[in-house]
Image 1 (tube, rainbow, N blue to C red):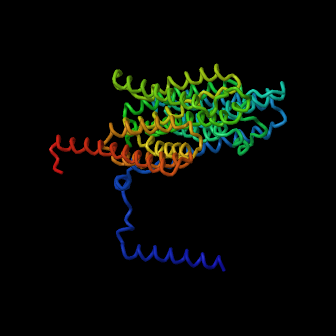
Image 2: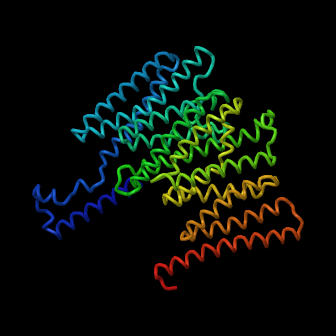
Length: 466
């Protein structure tokens, strides 16, 4: 029945085609080569060949690693040797073709294909080395975090040297497995690709798991600032993907370190008694002081350094935080990042407002709203310092950028909701709540009136009619 139906449809299509040919005799004329070439512009057409030469290596690289792993599963020495040798050869071929492509552009696609396969082979080589070491010594050379972190760092280097957008794109896949463990060590996604029975971190005191993301953040934030300076977010720029991915990875890596520190701070560190002032005034006061210092540094540098970009400050702040954290908390080396949670907001906010980053804007609104909500519903009386510092920074930024009315309205609404929710969460007296509600409304009334007055004065100076 189905075959007959398909045959009927095909017959109707053929009959329709023949009728069109009969009614339009000119269609039967053979076109000359010149006429055919004029009908098509290959430079504007989608290059299906180039696309297949990118997808093909991704699939081939993944399959090649899997095939070698299954064929020599019981021979770890042979497997490690084969994968490492192939990785080196493919990187060599890719680099050689990249150099030759400066004289022959057609070789660039083949070179990028070799680098794509090599980028997958590198992951297989690292895992094989890890397993070989474990079989020989009984210990783990790399946890999942270190393995994927090294893989990410090498791919990042190769992507920028070869300007390979697709190699950089592979890092999106790598970053999912790398950063998941930092967000929560229980979420080990490595088993999805066959890496089982492997720790996320080889140990809580393995400085490699702290060193790798710190180095990568220095690179990605500097690259991100460079992309912004050269306006690589322009749709016609060949660096456009690099602009967005470098910024995205910078935010994700620092955010993952902060979340890892929060998990450690409230669980392992407090239980171990290493920090006895958890949840006290000293704790939140210290967070507020560090936030204000970071804000002050940014404020001064913005006025003293020409073409200053806060991403360069982040490139300095993150490794310093990592060093202090490793020294101050040797048994929980990520703990220091707990104290830069507020500077993280300042960074995103400055990137959004100063650099007009379309990447930073949604990240800021999402992360800041969640952070303030969590602080507001917390019944801890001592995190008022953090709340007030965050709202103070937001209000200061809104006064400076008063023409950004959606941001001004956001600050007013989120400020009122945060403070009122916090008052209710702490269980104050009913009349005291009314008093504080009035003070909050007055404070934000003054704030909004000031931004409105700035805008009215600005319009008058420009001669714009009300």
